[in-house]
Amino acid sequence: MAESQGSTPLRVLVYSNDADTRQQVILALGRRPRADLPELDFFEVATAPVVIEQMDAGGIDLAILDGESAPTGGLGIAKQLKDEIDQCPPVVVLTGRPDDAWLANWSRAEAAVSHPIDAVQLTNAVAGVLLAR
Image 1 (cartoon, rainbow, N blue to C red):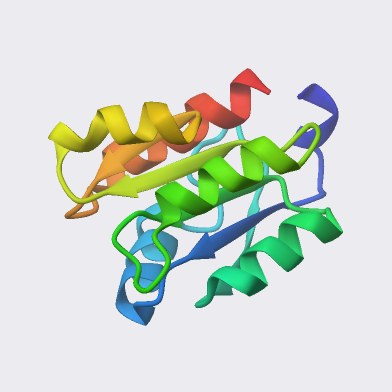
Image 2 (spheres, helix red, strand yellow):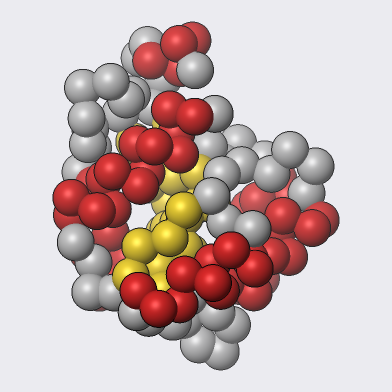
């Protein structure tokens, strides 16, 4: 990923039907969560059809999907994206509780962080996923 560490921000799709959850994710990560990552450019999405549309269109470097969203949860969307998009960008899912990690495995997400959102855990998960690309 060395070529991405220049001035081009990474596009991060943040999906939740709850605007507060989207804001918590964005505030937890900030524009530059770590020195070894490029800046992040957030794109907020509130509905599943728009997630699919944006991911199909390309240009997204990471998707953070809220597993607690309704009516369509981020875990199911993650599985659909991984099944349908060749070279799908990495996905981090937000689960309802730590015990839901098995659902994250089922969804084929690269990482999972449980609610309530912890800035350190989320930053570590996002950094790990992005640096492993």
